[in-house]
Amino acid sequence: MSTRTLETELLGRRTDFEYSETWVGYALLALRLVMGWTMFYAGITKVLDPSWSAEGFLLHAIPEGNPFTGLWTTLASDWLWLIDPLNQWGLTLVGLALLVGAFVRWSAFWGAVMMLFYWAASLPLENGIVIDDHIVYAMLLFGLGAFGAGRILGLDELVEDAGIVQRNPWLRYVLG
Image (cartoon, rainbow, N blue to C red; front, top):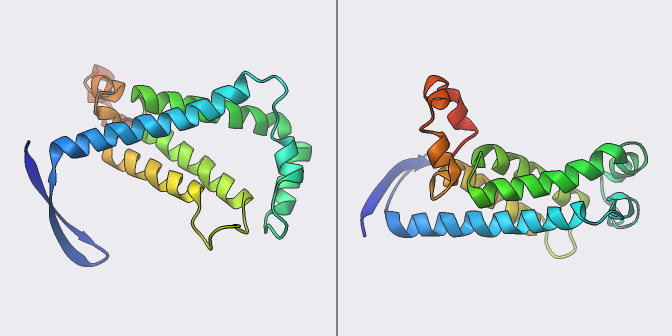
């Protein structure tokens, strides 16, 4: 088991620590698969249920005192034709991408955006001041994207070797 030392500056302070490459790899793979399954399952159950809609939640489940109540009402009244498929397919496709390790940075970004919307819809928080499960998920997705977790037993490892990525290195920003 090899170890490495990470040397970086965080918040203006020099930080060095040793870590096990093997265990970091296992941890990132496990986190990617768990988060992928969580999102995929949440999405596919909505896709397969023809009666599912975000309308009931947006109109009746937003906590009293939510600073964005007007936005959620408008989305439910005027934009449901877009919100429902974005929610259903967004969760499903982000989850699937994480499960197979394809376009992980791109998917993790959009998954985190969805989690921030869910967080905003749950304000004011019942059991916390700022942090709830949606923020934890958003940060986990940020970490998966930052590490390029799709390269660990994922399709991104194969795609990055393709000629098109070699000719267009900017594609690595959505892979990983």
